[in-house]
Length: 86
Image 1 (cartoon, rainbow, N blue to C red):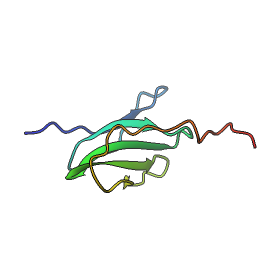
Image 2: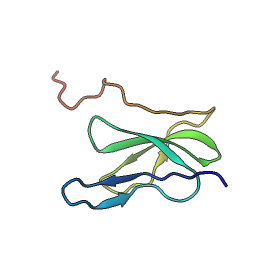
Image 3: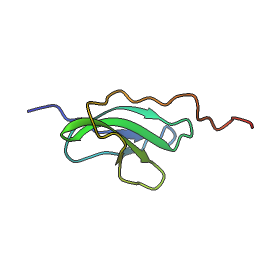
Image 4: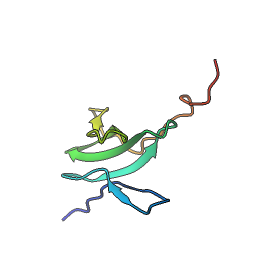
């Protein structure tokens, strides 16, 4: 049996824990977007390891954003920042 991981977030003030992923596969290596609203992670839920993104505020389903090869360890660049001034 292979190890399966899911992603959770905990509210520091209330202590409430919310499960973000479930089902088939293992979901690992999450990275928060600079906007604090999106989470990117790797998952093998469809067989190969790909990168998924989800918007946390509306409980949206994760969306696969890579489709070929093996894609692991996603990370946001500093390019997209909320405090950038034009």
